[in-house]
Length: 126
Image (tube, rainbow, N blue to C red):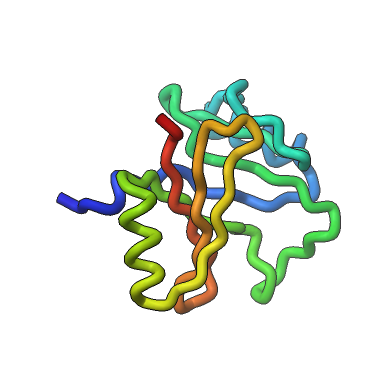
């Protein structure tokens, strides 16, 4: 059993057209809009699959789709122990950004993998 990560949490997609993207996932893939999205200071929507938010859509009006600027913003994993992760990252001299959701319910660590992919490691505050 992995002592650091629990499961894949969600993916985040960047879009210029929130309505079109939301309609695709809700009408074509039958996902539901999740009303529990924290009050972030940017537009977006969380979409649920089987009552679990798995796709986060974020609006960026300046985003242009290209190989250099992919539409996938980050991959998120649910974490068991944020302090253990921070200790491991510090030991390996890996920089991270620590944040809290605006509702102060989830602690987040953001890191970048060797390929430049942003990863979010998060844990609800107990």
